[in-house]
Image (cartoon, rainbow, N blue to C red; front, side):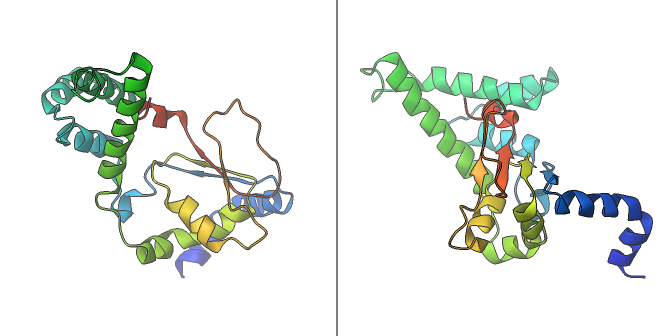
Length: 198
């Protein structure tokens, strides 16, 4: 028995329910944080370790203390950012700026560090497509997709696969905001991302 047939035999009611929900435009997709791991993207813990090891952050001693204290990973990221901000606030090129402008620049620097650490081992786009392509059609047909991943692989694939009259997707990072209810794909990075970029 092939793998697809086995899944259909084991979960016939669940599959029928999902098909019915999709037909009625009530189907949503939730992608867990581990989806990108086989592609070479780091998980939360590895990403924070990479950030702590980055030459601009260089705070592995602090990270060891936070791990020993069993601080949650989002809190570890926030504390690392706070230390990074405080350490670089007195840099020569920031000293003459007012506080809000300096913090804006430091947040941008932090985002660049996170981006570099996240995509350091990113695979070529052909590999991404071969792995994620199975999700794209389902995501395009679903009303909303909640994505717990930090990478934008799925969003890039949706843009590549969209027709000329489609928007591709809409990103919502604040669950309190209204968004359009048309049959578009909505990628929703969750609030945990704010632990990395504040």
